[in-house]
Length: 217
Length: 85
Image 1 (cartoon, rainbow over the protein chains, first blue to last red):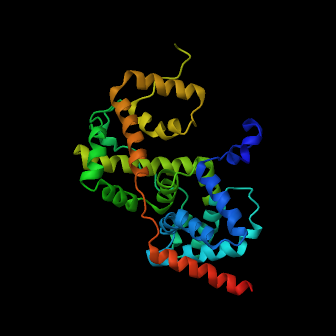
Image 2 (cartoon, each protein chain N blue to C red):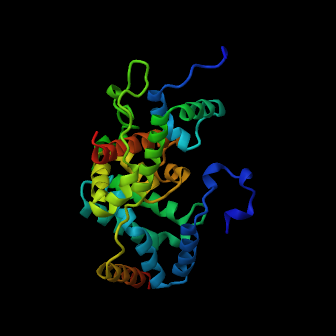
Image 3 (cartoon, each protein chain N blue to C red):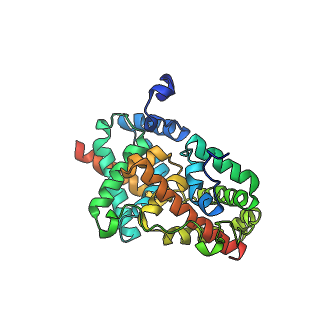
């Protein structure tokens, strides 16, 4: 494994990424470079749906997001010999995707850095001292069963859809696609502090949506 | 102690929670955060819920490529190869 050879402390934080996902990608990239068509299709199978989901945050429709993702794959084929392996394949891939999606440029309001400062929990739920007046309802225990039985996944999708685009991008990359914080910073070209603020607001909104759905508040 | 900053209140806790989960709090902030948690069942529940939220969001999975899409990308690859030759 590439990164395992150096002491972790000697590396800048954002170089630290070593997940099984990356290793499998590296094997496929090597096969693709050797002209293996199946390796290309496997790479597409591993990443394409996530790419379309991410591109959806930047463009107006799924159809356009699909085009952006396809276009990205063509870019991968053309550029794979220039891929130096300094970042993971996934980071490289998603950067190409995000750049293309941005230049497709349907959304003008994307320069807003972090969105409005909505509190994580509505102020009315705390008393004057800042302590809980209306504490969190218990719902975690029910949620796994509800996820299977009653389409809670659709509710989560809907709540994701309500987020401002930049919050949604960060939450999708972190919590759905499992990228690390530093990877998300690389892909979206944002600071770690910005990434945390966006993640915080996005996750707080999702928690509230789950509480509303499951806990009755 | 008189030199310590005052205790965190619940309303502050819910805003610090992501920094806590991300390991982005300073050592003293982290101590104050955990001191509040130890004494507050509601904030403990809230933390529990944030972790559940992350887990539930992570359970969203997109479908695999359909056979038709596999076909489509195989063709994309072949067109690209043809361009190279």
